[in-house]
Length: 252
Ligand SMILES: Nc1ncnc2c1ncn2[C@@H]1O[C@H](COP(=O)(O)OP(=O)(O)O)[C@@H](O)[C@H]1O
Ligand SMILES: [Mg+2]
Image 1 (spheres, rainbow, N blue to C red):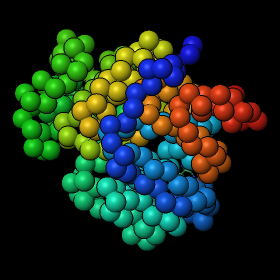
Image 2: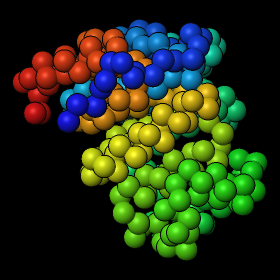
Image 3: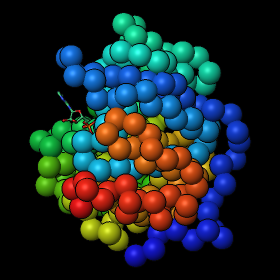
Image 4: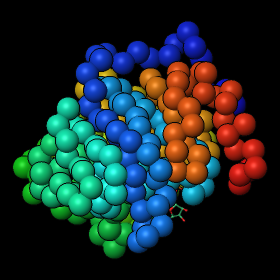
């Protein structure tokens, strides 16, 4: 499957950096796993961070979302430093800046209905019907299943629900961890169509993926991470050719 067609590659609408990782270092206990990583993600763009298992991709998102402190470097959102060593921005501050992480486990509540999962997001300021309108127009299949327990949805539908919950917070910066995990390619394609549409509305999106090259079809820019370092940054079409080399000796 070739996800990238250079002639239809979307262009990021502006050149204002929304998110900057500047020489970031992070550790679990005394073991450093991010060894000075730098990335710049433009406002309203889709940035794909790819790499083998254990490269440090999820850790980069955790650092950005304030779930793990930095041990070196700086993270800036819209030019403002929000994370520095021994100082983690509080969740409220990040939420106010519109940072929203959809973790690998999707962060939904399996024993609640679709509607109740959405209802829980009303503390972000919208009414449940406003949230449902956005969710069901973006993902009509969710509307058909609004009374179904979230845990009984298909994997793709659960990911749609996770994205709908994120949309209820009006995110400026959406962090997506392994969107495609365990899903059929056709579903992954649909989800990435939705991601591309969100970026057109001005949402900046950082997507982490181990395997899915489908993301390269909607990404404006991409990077490969290996062993806690960014080994290559470039156009998605250009990076697709580098992927195989990056994975050699890895899990594949
Ligand atoms: N909670 C944790 N405690 C200790 N080490 C961790 C933890 N989470 C991840 N690691 C380690 O950090 C490194 C990077 O992991 P991670 O960011 O999850 O990689 P990726 O998402 O690219 O697969 C790996 O060596 C992993 O074993
Ligand atoms: Mg991961």
